[in-house]
Image 1 (cartoon, rainbow, N blue to C red):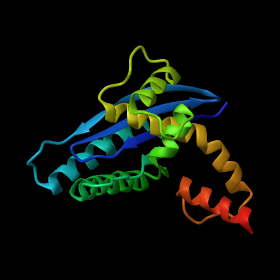
Image 2: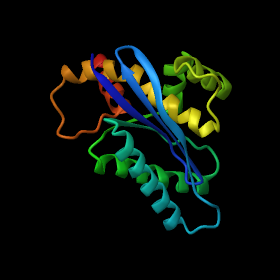
Image 3: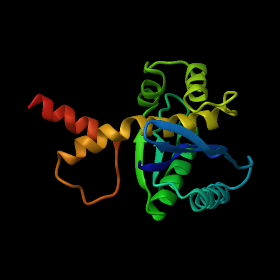
Image 4: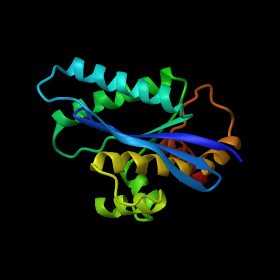
Length: 191
């Protein structure tokens, strides 16, 4: 039986959620989860360094094979979007430098994979994370639960993506991007 460790990331600069989930067959179990936190009013470069250093420590300690990261979705606050985007980039860089396969999922894809409904409420996602990982209570803070949800999404989605990729020509990159694969299969269906 293959065992895979997935590192889920809920990006943020003030608080970045992470969750390491072990996949053994169709069983999911939590290995480690929490938040990387940086202090407000600290220069952005220093905050990004903290995120990078702590994330590389988590990767070195738990040795996941895959990093799954939530894609950004912001309607209004562009300042927040920029800083979260910077932290997200640092997370992806840490993963790629460690040789991890990376995957990205939209909030709707995460809700659909975890709850079965793409417009699920945050509390519904948190409760399903608790149930799927057999936790005694919902993970706190929200960023931690969100990171675990990203890892669960990859665990539920990756087997299908791998099967689709095996029918396509191999890519030169180690990057597994859920949206690109999904869009590619939709284009093929229309032709």
